[in-house]
View 1 (tube, rainbow, N blue to C red):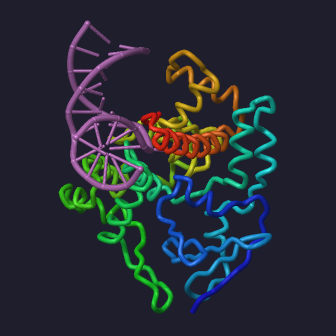
View 2: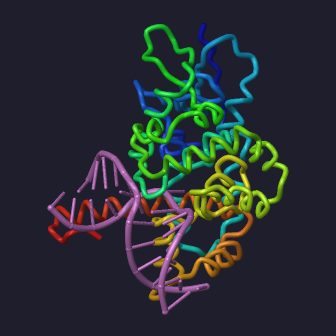
View 3: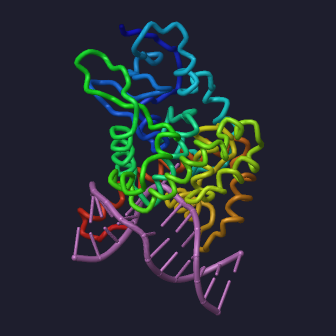
Length: 298
DNA sequence: ATCCAGGCAGTCA
DNA sequence: TGACTGCATGGA
């Protein structure tokens, strides 16, 4: 059977949030978003005043979903902490109204971002889809719906050969994914325990993994553990910071870290997500415009 | 066809 | 420390 629920929420752009490069498995289908959360098939639709959800089984307790979507977060309270005089951030917030941060499962988040390095978001989605199809447990879906699969367990991927992983299109990232799966499966890396550590200790643990540097570690700290000051710096955010705050000079990693914390404040991670999405969209627009104008890109 | 993507690790100065 | 490079793959 299918259970449905309606959650009242303000300032929540579901589509923007689910497609903003923090989670990779959501698909738009017939006016809603479908995915797998906590091992369950889920369909979400944006409605006036809130979000309608549907899932399989007799569900009384929807906390697994409300927690994932972070429906209890008051976005207005977060935006209030942003620097008031920052016009770049203000533009980003205005352009991306209702953009939220999800609270994802640590293993899926870690594995996904290990697969993300120097990959475009559509590619990451493709790789993860193949990975789930090949190694994920089947998930109950509505009658007649195409089959869906859970994200593969660490203990499953730990036993998969590197060549089989590469067959999913992940290239050199296969080794890092396999090693991470093994460390998690053996308990050498305890992902539950990371939640009890402070931010820098947790980051240290994550960066012990091959293929996990500061950027990927910060993604996991922000998207899975909710450390509000974790600040992933990828190519887009680097561009945003460079042109907006450090015009006409190179910026060093250490310098970025101290600036970010001091400038963006206690919710720097949220600020990062706005800058990321805003600049990514702008960059694509510019490139497209430049190409049609015959200028040859950025 | 060339460039580049939610990077990282190894190497050399 | 800082700069440079190889790594796989596929869309634009």
